[in-house]
Length: 217
Ligand code: GRF
Image (cartoon, rainbow, N blue to C red; front, side, top):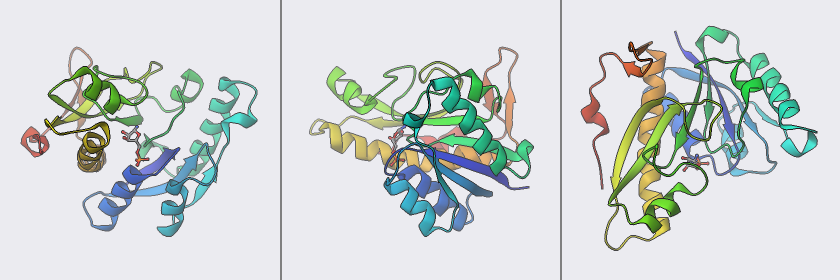
């Protein structure tokens, strides 16, 4: 049975596009029920409309507190799922921290894509952080979201080498290529109900061959 997705965005939406393309191409068994942005006029909203996906703008500035915003967002997301047990919330460039008011409404069902090999370089502009630090390998991570900043259980990662003639933007562009492979792949594993938790509570996907996520320059 298909996964139901609500995708939260704040910007360009290239990861949203990767999800939409994977669905259209038959690589991802899912439907995007709704795209929610906290900012008006971002490219991600145009991408959603172009694909015939419903959109909603919920400006965080209109709320007195983070908790109020989280509660309103949870309400919007809840209303978008037809079968909540098949629902997954995807943070794809969503630039707000979500607290327990939101996360407790969707336990283990909120995933984020982050442009570094976590736990290295959490937070804003991870590509800049990695570049400035001089690491030779960075990458991207898909993880379950908890109340910390990019601290939730890691689902999957893809590595990206830092090349001698890189700058921050060239590196970021090559990381994005891997993000666009990794995120739809992980969502498909969720659609196939492959996610388990080992005895220490770490997520594991049964039957997934990790070689598909090996580094690509
Ligand atoms: C990506 O690098 C993602 O990892 C980070 O924000 C960026 C969003 O890009 N969380 P886009 O909006 O999907 O193009």
